Amino acid sequence: MKKGKKLYEGKAKIIYATTDKDLVIQYFKDDATAFNNQKKSTIEGKGVLNNRISEHILSSLSQIGIKNHLVKRLNMREQVVKLVEIIPIEFIVRNVATGSLTKRLGIEDGTILKEPLIEYCLKDDKLGDPLIAEEHILAFDWASKKEIDKVKKMILRINDFMIGMFRGVGIKLIDFKLEFGRLDTNGKKDVILADEISPDTCRLWDSLTDKKLDKDRFRKDLGDLIPAYTEVAKRLGILHEQSNLSAVNVTKLSSIKRKRKWKYQ
Image (tube, rainbow, N blue to C red; front, side):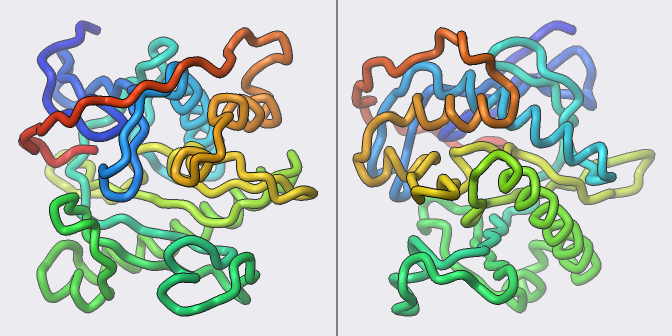
């Protein structure tokens, strides 16, 4: 399979065409961003770890019947994935109150929620990915009621599985972001899980110490992001103890404006 032209570049990944019209190559960058792209850096090795961790989780989800876009991992930084039309909604799944939820509602940080909380954000960087209601999604036809109902059922299964998977390696799944896309199969649209699942898109705390093992280490200037991501990969059995991935220099990126020409991220 040959890599073709660049179709889209987002904050964390680049999408390339292939010789198969139904497949694309997803490249994981080392770029780190936070606060709607206001904070930017390059952290060498982050893309490699996210590629491996996301492949592991998506492959595991496939085994319990969660359809997703992953076809295979090509190399250290790239995956072959199915071409989908991304639904322009970020689905936020919360098991423990932290981050923006505590600020909005005055909830004590670390409060365990009685049931998983699903929130919706419109995927629009210019607007700051605003929080929206299900009624907004339906009113503006971003997704149908049938699609939303299917997604919510998938989310609860994904959450149950991931809570157990991480609990088994001494990690608490605090919250995470999911994206879904429409896969065109013989003229029929099927909603499947897309994007990535990694420490970039999850909040992960050590079960005993509450040490943060996710992108909050970048957001909050805690440092040691690569060791934290590496720890997650090792606990999941992806990397051996002898792995030579280590923390490296962090340099600020220059501000680069990119035109959004494609729906995929």
